[in-house]
Image 1: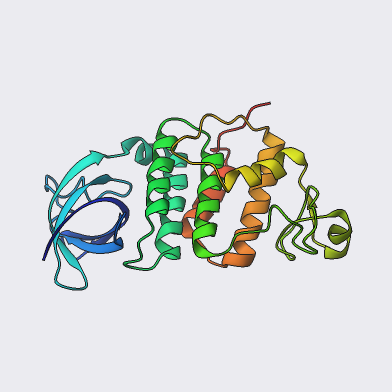
Image 2: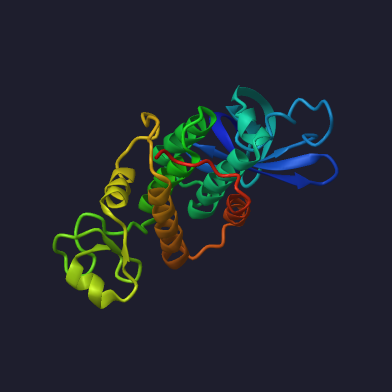
Length: 253
């Protein structure tokens, strides 16, 4: 059967001497694997369309299992994301999260739209770390790993500005003292965590966040992902190496 879909290339893997297997993320059918014959060859009509982060209209034949690419029309190449080392690492992290935390054929229309908006926002120069955190929250909500941010994760009461990975989110003062691992976030970071759960990446503006607040957010989000999702994302390891080398962008003062 012949399919025509708008999709984003999440991953591209070499196949044989000249082909690539691309993982397409679609709005209505989730992830679909498609073989792009000749995509590794110079001048191939499929080479540009098989690049990671490419958004376009793909036509492929599929009878079950892996499809075969017939044609592709690029809508947005997102070439800036591939040309910038740090932005490429952030985009790769978002794509890998999506690939590893969604099942083949699992429709996730909101996640699909948010990922497209996240890549557009990165290309538009918006803060990469903040965009990544907002998308992480979308991903956590989809996969069922959301922290408790509106009630104390320990007793269900009103939380303060402390966060316990062990208890499961923001906690009140008495629970934070019992938790042992509670971290004092400060009001700005706590408010941003709540904001990240509801903001639409298609409408996000340029959010100015102080460097110290961004450091707190990064530590909390990564600690949460490591404890509750428990997946070693290769792209995040690359991202962390670039951050240590000073490639990441700073926040406002």
